[in-house]
Length: 463
Image (cartoon, rainbow, N blue to C red):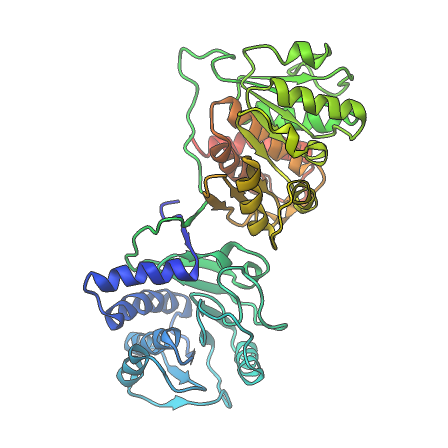
């Protein structure tokens, strides 16, 4: 994706201030932002009548500009504003509207509803009166559009500030993506999301949206070792390791091995297995990255396997049971490590490393900083956090990924990318995108084996 910045409220304010400092007025920027939003609404409205709900701040000011632009396009527009504008820009926008403004939604009968009541700065629940007005208008319009963020959703967390909020068909982000656009539960209320450009510059410390990676075909001089050797350590449930290996084979590595003293009855002819002790197999200098955790178990033998991997692997992906067995004392070597916990495993790691934080994103950031590992915190709104403060958010992916074995596939893709020489943060971002694309390519109701097979098609999209 071209535009990948994700801003907090404070970062967005800083970005806008930089535009003002360069000579653009608040009113001029409002015309740019709201004008871009109005063009989107003109297209989706297709000549239908529109109701614009305006609040007292600059989000409401955007609404007045949108209403005026839509009227100029030929749409029938009515404006509802339960509160008078409070900012100078919003007052100027209302004056330029120069038409009737209703104070309630009584009798509103338009077809398209545009929510400009409150924007990204909202941090408290809507008043009962405003919540009722919002819900009533939303229920009486066939198409619902939110400007920047739906009213009642907190920008920096995606939290729902009210118990009942409308479900929108389209959300138009102004200037930059915000955290709520990719964070549950708020993300689920927004429908399709589109970005309206207003010329904001990058802000230091902003998060990134994970986009399509740039991958390449092997060079003409490549061979299996030059393309990267990924080793996967199995355990009590060898099928999970096999599943991860199948994904790893399709994510770019030239050679994938299964290590461990157990049998791999379903490995297939394309996977090499080595049953010698890890103290012997892991010293192979051709190994580029190691995955341990899927199906490992939590026995003493599993703990010994984790210790061997921590001591001998050149780079590590830690998943599943390995995360339950990991202790801070294990992180004695300075090697690249990627941990891929789901919420339960993330909680276990936070307790092990004495990290106190609320929410997946905050926990991942704090744990990465404390442990020195890159953390890929899996879930419906996956986040990737690096010890140096870098943060990436995943775009929405198929809900069919909520199937047993899906995490094993993700871990397999990640170790394959690390075997290719990617650093843990880059490998995690590439793995998350390929994982989501593999699900999209396959469609509905897939098995984890089918998901692993679909990784090849996802990879091909990046060439």
